[in-house]
Image 1 (cartoon, rainbow, N blue to C red):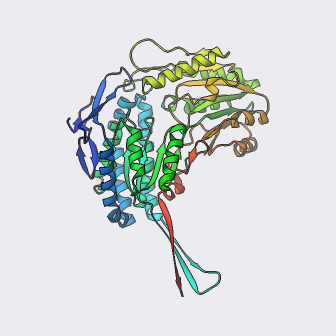
Image 2: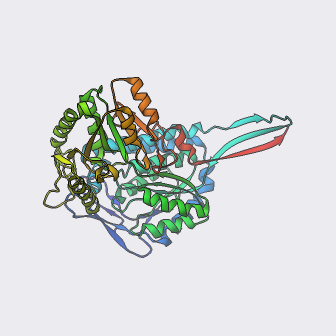
Image 3: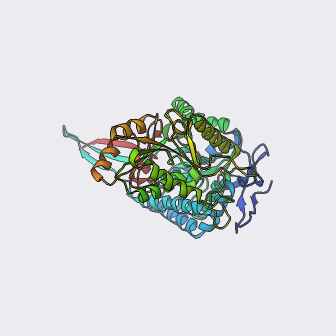
Length: 488
């Protein structure tokens, strides 16, 4: 295999090998796997298919690099991240096109993701020099305690396909800032962005072995091998709750520090005193950002009865006006979904919801032809228990149901094992704050359709995960606390 591939619209060659110990290499088996273009199913690239031997080699490299990198002055780590931020910003168009090619998302979404992704490097460049400690006098007297924070160690970072740049920088930013070394297992649908990011970090001065990337089609065995290695200290995973539960059980065997950003089933509540135009604007962001393929996507719309018909009509009009097509084409606002499995799931959920009694205002039928496309879809009169309300759709589908009282809205919104994010639109701030406090979610967008911010602690409650990413809290996930007690 070649170590890189040239793709249309991408100025520089994109790496396709494993990145271990600062070197690009083929898989130990010599095998590769195909990365497809979701717009037509054609071959984009063939990427090295990492094995259990390869991930062990990556842990070897990360473990060897750890002592030196952990001792690196915080300012040096900060400057590495700042340089990486600048490189990403300078190459924004190239990264956006690459993400659009391998993920399918429309270029506006890809450009927004790249801006968001780069910001994690800038934010944690600033946090690297803010790792503090403490000096305490023992209450009984006679001793003093010095509290310090040290890097947790070698980390395994497992990232999803829906935000191939941002989900990786959100983990690598704090890991590098804290002085940790990492082994990255990117999603098999979108490995190219992770590999190009590794190249950027090397250009930014991150030492060999600090970041290692092992794409693979055998995720179960490769991840299990890394997690069983006694040198590993942390697992950070973004993906489904089902897989997260498996990884948490495996993490228990080595008592690994675990961060889990898992599934969502976000409610979007529209009260009768809301500015409907603003609510529709927010709904378009919360639902259609990344084509609905986001854990933060609004998945269930609860609209107070007096304004439900008007809201549904406005939303259907806006969604129907979106332009579907290849993500890199001019004017396209909705690209294909990432793969056949995803579009088949969306189609099954819509069909099941219509069969349960829902009515289609727009969309609702998978188009003929190549590619993994599904139209923007609005469903109304959606009955309780329908698939679109109980499953995380991960596609451009907005099911709408009504409520009468705030208490009913809260009961409906909280009737889920998930609790990542919720959205509320109301003209009454006090009402909005009461609802926000009562919603069982780690984040709430109050009169806002996007909550993600590198400076804020991203994460959920219940079965939506453990830990926080971003904000001041994010770097703490990669640090361990030590205290030294001495007489005085």
